[in-house]
Amino acid sequence: MQNLSGINVSEPPTGPGCVECTAEGGWWFHLRRCAECGHIGCCDSSPNQHATAHEAATGHPVIRSYEPGEDWFWDYRTSSVFEGPALAPPLSHPLNQSVPGPAGRVPRNWQSKLH
Image 1 (cartoon, rainbow, N blue to C red):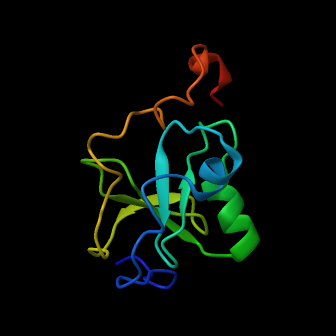
Image 2: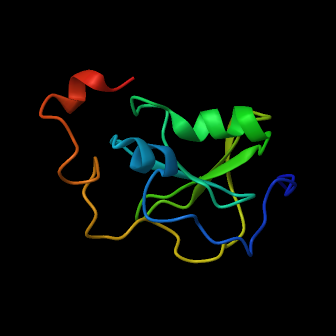
């Protein structure tokens, strides 16, 4: 059984997209949700890697995919994927949100900017 420290099942997500990319006018490839505080950040393939930056800044050790149809968790402490508990909804960004996103801010050459 996975250690559930770092998971708050009642904390809702902070919104439909990466908090920092939205504030900076940037874009993301995929989204990750902090399982402790609900912060939405962009994945490590995204140009700015805000989900991992959030973990480094806060010490919140667990993220969950925020992509439709994905329910995996990642534990930074053990560098492992695991199945976790149900979190407060919504469990993903809106289905009509583009990937990468958000629509209108993704450069034409976005693939060349991925990590």
